[in-house]
Image 1: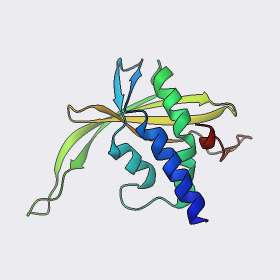
Image 2: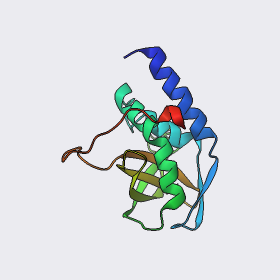
Image 3: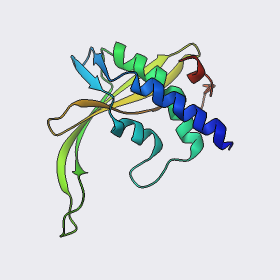
Length: 152
């Protein structure tokens, strides 16, 4: 992959991301914060850097995720789990807090892409943007377009 192309898309996605700061979500009736954790999660999974193609896909879906957050009045997924927070202590153990996740699925954009947008809250903190991804196995004729972020 051309590193210049990748970096250009990343910079563009970061500008779109940073321009948001907070968006009101009608379902949660609260503000969704766009902090550094969410943008980091677009690039890294729990254990490793995502491959460049996957990062580009997430970057290109970001403008659509913003639309979903602004307009979602119906919840498709909800879960709670404990997650590690902070650095490990001298004993090698991490503190944990309960994290709550909400998933909103919608068909959006000019090309009618079905995406899943994930929001997260750790402990009693803010609801934050966490992730965006296609919401299908890409069977049955759905096409993913790698364009669109340039228009954002």
